[in-house]
Image (cartoon, rainbow, N blue to C red; front, top):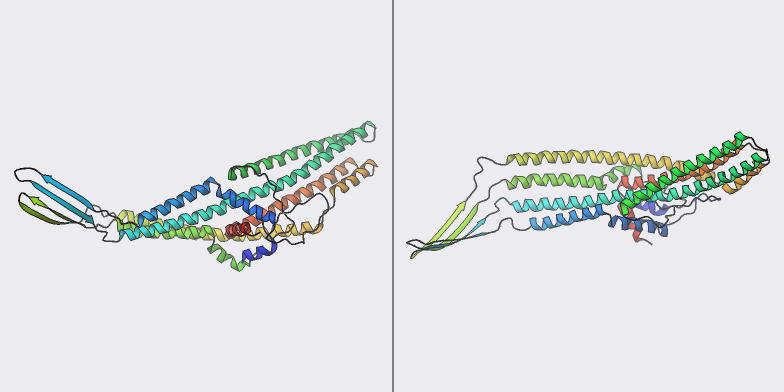
Length: 421
C-alpha cells in the first residue's frame, strides 16, 4: 500500500537544506514522526479549512443534508375547507381532503436526495485534494526559491567583488579593457537573473496568499531523502477506482439514474380523497369525494427523456474520468521515476564548498594562471550547477505531490501525517 511505503521513507516534506558547504548523500533515514513533516501537514490542513472554496463546498454539503431532511417528510399536507352560505336555507359544511402519495414519490425523492448528499460529500473530498496539491506546490516553490535566492545573492556578491578587483588590476595594467568589460557584463547578467528569481519568488508567495489569505511566515525545510519506490504498477487500476474524482463521477452517474426514477414518479397523477360534513337547514350533510388528474394534454414524458439523456452523459463522463485518472497515474509514475533517478545521480556526485572553490579560482586568476573569461565561466558554472540542483529538488517534490494527487492518496496522507507525532 502507498501509505505503508511512505512511512518508511518520509514523504513530501522530507524536505532538506542543501547548503553551500559539504554535505552527505542523504542516506540517514528520518521517520514519519519528523516535526517539520508534521508541521507541513498541519499547515496544509489548516489552510484548507480556511479556504473560501472549501467553505463554500461545505455549505453546499449542509444544504444537501437539509434537502435530505425535507425529502424524508411526507410529500402532501392535508387540506381543510369550510364553506358557509346564508340564504333562505342556511348551509355550513366542514371538509378535510388529502392527496395520497400513490406512487411513492417521497421515497424516490429521498433516494435522490441521499445520492445528492453523497455527491456533495465526494465533491468536498475531491476539492480538498485539489487545494492541498496547490498549497503543497506553492510551499515547495517558496522554499526552493528561498534557497535559490541565497545562491543568486552569493553569485552577485562574488561577481561584485570580482569587478572591484578587475578594476584595480586594470588600473595597474594587469588586464586589458576587454577583460574588465567582460567582468562588468557578467555582473549585469547576474543582476538580471537575480531579478528573475525574485519575480518567481513573488509569484510563489502570491499563489500561497491566494490560497490561504496570508503569507507563509515559517520556513519549511526539505530534507535530503525522498520516497524512492512507488507502489507496484499493478495496483494502479485499484488506485484509479478509489480516486476521489472517479468516485465523484460514479456517484454523479448514480444520482442521474436516481433522478430518472424520481422524475418519472413525479409525473404520475396522485388521487385526492376528501370528506365533508355539515348542515343544510335542519338536515345533516355528509359527502365523500375522489379526484384524479387526467394527464391527457401533457403526460410530462419529455422531462423523463431529458433525465435519461443526462444519465447517459454522466455514465460517459465517468468512463472518461477513469481514463483520465489512469493516464495521470501513469504520467506521474513515469515523471517521478525520471526525476528521482536524476536526483539520485546528482546527490551521489557530492558537493564541494563554493567558498573554497571561489577562493582557489580567484587565487589562480590573481596569479595570472587563469584568464578572466575562464574564471567567470567556472564561477558561473559552479553557481548555476547548484541552482540547477535546487530546481531539480523542487521538481522532485512537485513530482511526488503530483503522484499523491494522481493516485488519490493525498488527503489520507495529510490526515495521517498531521495526527502522528
